[in-house]
Image (cartoon, rainbow, N blue to C red; front, side, top):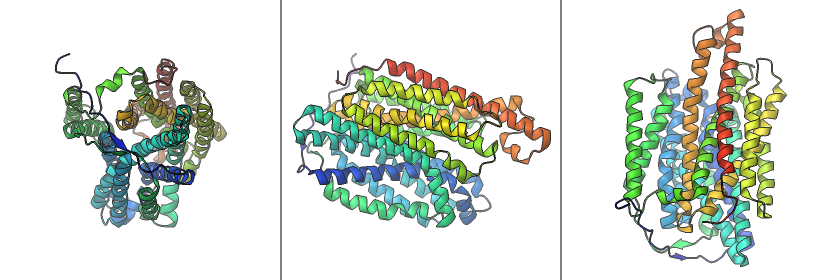
Length: 510
């Protein structure tokens, strides 16, 4: 259609650095794993240390600013994601990796030195700009390391297998870090002080930064490209407005309030302008041509639904344990250990099997089945359900998500045109983040409405002050509400299963 076709991207010209030997490649892989851990841990490590932070910086009004403290990192990271993908494809992933890590470390130092909640929130947002690139850019680096190793062997099949194993490891570490982040944050806050949540990044991150400059060998881009900063700005505006709707809607402001409605309209307008820009820009930030590939379309959709379901599982299982079962916050975090174990073990196994020739589609389908079964099991929770049942459901969930997280990203990377590897990788992360935000909004609204209909009056925050019959009724109502949330999450994973079945079964780029 005239005026809407995307101009072909300029031919990529690369100059390869000196190929790394086996030892250097192993060191580079370790650097990537550590970087992913830093990024994932810092995305959720603050949630368990909010009380000491508020007590130290602003004991009077700090509680009211906790949502911004938690959201600032996520908002900045999500807004920056599309730009990082294009920068990788234009400048080379090594330069972008080093830049993102340096930004992240600078933000970590500023967070640790903050003397007020306002300073900490601003520093947290700056840290998020770097953190948004660490996870996605590191996935690109991992894929290119596998491709470089395969090219050195001189076998196309080895090239694909090397990339599969490294991509799977990245997904595994991300899942384990996500599960263990809240526990680690609480431990550091209790025994070393909350500032060490951020300072601990510095010695580790600086060592990674220096080693990355020396050890990591990747292709260097010699042809520069125009960066669609307007498209990146529109993507940032859309994601920020949408995340604010999910953050504020039904909590700080009513869903029908002018603030929430205005943000929703702004998000819709920014999305429309972003799509127009991507259809007309010479070098778009997220080429719409990617969506012509069936694997990309379904892969993005499945990853978004995974984000929705993970929000419904992890967050509300933790709330159930603390509100209904009286488990302390730190102890509740330990319930995520079976999930982390499941993700790690099954991720390693699936990665090796894919390297041996098994279809990635098989594990995407299997992962959605296991995750659906785990969420369905959680819908049976009651006020006296055995805690080992909860642990078993989380283990089962880890087995499901462990197959999904690494293999979905790798499947998209294998399908993407080589010149668009960066935007495809960040696209997967972008859709997962938006899914998580929408899941938070949907499940929060569901929990509130069901509890209001079945509870003794008031909100879920009042449960701790209730006694006797009123408390029993409130707990029953809360469990019923949580069961409905888990049922919605199960529905999201079943839809993901339908889409996973429609994924192409081959690993070609056609």
